[in-house]
Image 1 (cartoon, rainbow, N blue to C red):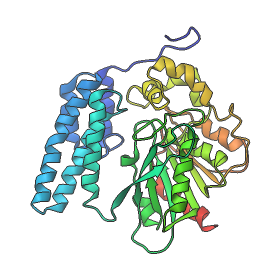
Image 2 (image 1 turned 90 degrees about the vertical axis):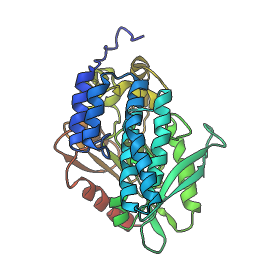
Image 3 (image 1 turned 60 degrees about the vertical axis):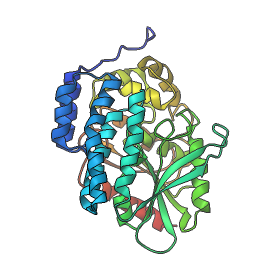
Image 4 (image 1 turned 120 degrees about the vertical axis):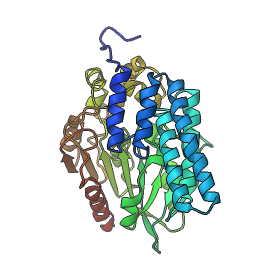
Length: 376
């Protein structure tokens, strides 16, 4: 139940959500990156509801023929067609579980998206390896952290970019190509509370990365002295925190569109419900932090403030802050706050909304990381 001091959150109509996602499909933007736009439009025109089970079932039904076509093309030796079909299946299964796998049909869609992802990845070069890393810490002793390791086609001991997304974009959705092209290995993982992560998000969720960094240190061919971390959207929260809590284990960190303090205030949460996120923003954030409802998120979120936790004035690893100045999901003021506290940091802010979509975005991040790693 929402407390008297907490604002009621706006809930979008189906028509509003449909129009936002159709526009994203036209521009191949999250979560419609790999989705055939005409098929997405057809499903959205027919569906008429945000009911989680019906949503997942509708998009999964659109995905299955592509998966079957991929199998047939692969059997016929047509690798290019098979990969194209598997990627389309992955994209549709991904939308089926969007924004979070928080119902039975959505959870099934997520597993099917993983199957399609690996079918497509097996037909690509360089390939990807699924790795299992022992969890190190009290919260999930004996558990396993799943990651996807991408190695560039080059010899030698490799610096590593550990990257993860946010509340709706998991390790399967990460784009390793810009980093591989720069000669960097990429380890894609899930932040706490999403995908295959063994723990929910919490005030101490940074413990997840202990086992990841230990695994890199023990893995032949990877250079544990040259680790960069990149957290996107909500995942940027963890990158900013790790820059301070694990600065002895990383050489560079990037918070790409992440929150830090103001985003967790009830007034901002209410404002963001009317922003660019398509639907269920508060519920999906709640899901990533071990909660269920928007009311629970409103109650819990202030505890995550990095300012109130005393993190921001501690020494940090080199930290790059990146976002769009008009972000309506997480306020740009959170980035300014990071710059006002602790040691000197780097920043690049772009016109536009969440994440700062710009042709120079990834070149900026990759160039900065490569420069920082070259100092080691």
